[in-house]
Length: 365
Image (tube, one colour):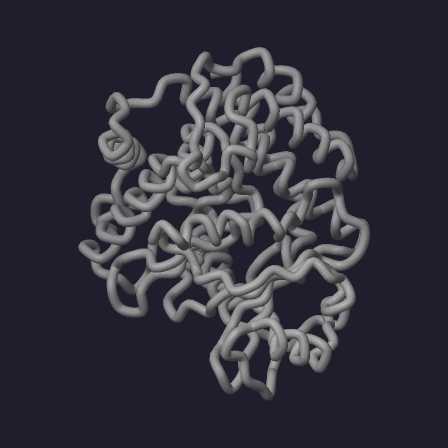
């Protein structure tokens, strides 16, 4: 095995180890467990202590905790402490969309309560059910058989297609986002977030900030979008190749389904940049049982009654790489400000430039 292959293999295996399971609560994310216990005893039906609290290792943005009580296990997700960018870490929106989708039978954890009283744990939080299953941080699904991988990828495709075909108006979510002009608004939003978090000059980001608004495709479809739909934001059934819960709805809104889906396609396009997954580039997808990017696109289009291909793929790729780079720059900014939620968040700084440069190459292709 080459040195590069060994390095990537070690990086991938360490992702599963780094982000799986729980750890003691970080000092800067500590909460008053007795106060939380008393609040839940009063407001959460069926809750019965004593209460033990641990923090999940995974998650860059909103600190997430495992609550173990006599009555059940629960998950608490909160805004991080400290100075926050406007509209970031909107756990209130997460709770609202999870509640709306849960009532339709879409695979999300059951939401229990939202608390906007900062006196309980220090910031706004919500509590939902703990879902027993598998979270996989490696896109090639090591240790599985090709048929199981194929079934998991097909179900992942089915779930995002189902999300994009839900009638958000019927769920009372007309005001959850603004239909139309999605890319224009998103480019503006992430440009502002990037500038507020900027820690140094990145010429490729400056290029994309100018190029993207001038090249938006003429397509104004609207749907619920997840905003960060990827393998490690899904819970798989403990033994079956199917998705039982979709997590991390912080970036969800009413937006363009192709923006959401082509972001998800970054799994096939993402290079190794020293942060997060190395993607599926260079892997033998046929022997693994994983569909090619084109096969995956075709299946999604069939499920959404679209044509068999997606036009303007170079724009979507450039846009999504810009967006990822801006998100990671936000993490870098939180490292700077001391509010980042992961021990590994500092690596984000090094990934911004390479991602922006790849986006620039797509834009010029």
